[in-house]
Length: 171
Image (cartoon, rainbow, N blue to C red; front, side, top):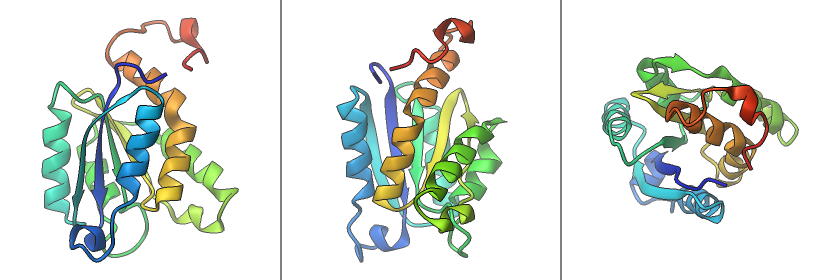
């Protein structure tokens, strides 16, 4: 259960931001979060612009109403895929297991998952996780990561100080 965990979702997509393609990812991620009793504070769709991405991520990381910042998009190798680069500049502690798990599990679905550069880490005490840009990929990855996200938030909020005492019990 995601009870009392507050999320913000940043969709980075030139096409969706310009209205050329509707964003489906944000609403599907929100639905998953709320289905698990989490709270989705914000969904924002912006172009793949490093300065805009950085400004929003920094603002949200300083917001006491947010525990987890999810990004969707910009994790590939294209020229405009810059979300991961901004994330890596901002995080104070990297958590490579999130990206590793997304790539590992996604490789069972598509061979192109190996091209993902998704990253995760801590920014101002908030968990920041990069998800793929496709709705299907983003929802699958978030589903796989929910237990570790819950645990990470509990640790960051100092609700858990002994990780062994809660090993695997985040349902």
